[in-house]
Image (cartoon, rainbow, N blue to C red):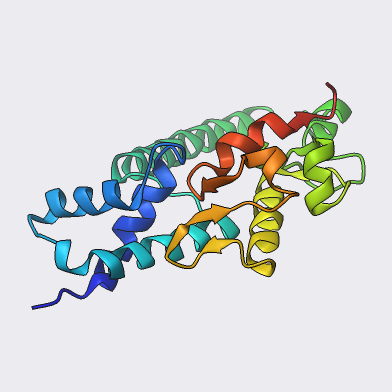
Length: 208
């Protein structure tokens, strides 16, 4: 009897997102699911591999951040603790205001340097490290263009190039047969799980 593989999507996404892309593979993910649920998926190996590859592509193009239940619980505990602290501070503040009602205190203002540390030069909010704009090597520029961009966008553009030029092995979708433009970056062939490793050698910080 075949198993509905879609019910394992959340587990597959979690494994892909939290694993080192240079070490993870469809086989390792399958083994992990088998151990986790005490099942055998050998008969559906091909279908599961295709599902894993589809999820890897989707998460590469639209990355998301997953947190563990422990991290989530810790975050909620921290929030509740802060609520209590703020409530207590508010009570103290109100009592202080009653005692010093005749004294007007100046409204606290943010220092200019504090405001500047939260925004970019164009006034937009700063984002996380994954959005840092990086310089591209000449080989990488030859594939996706010269404009500096975040690492996440570089990965998306590389995948766009691969799909537009039909460079995925039709018999094994996770393998990429490199053309003359990709070969200086990845070699003659690579896998989707090795892209991040090779791209690191072709991306540099703007201050370098």
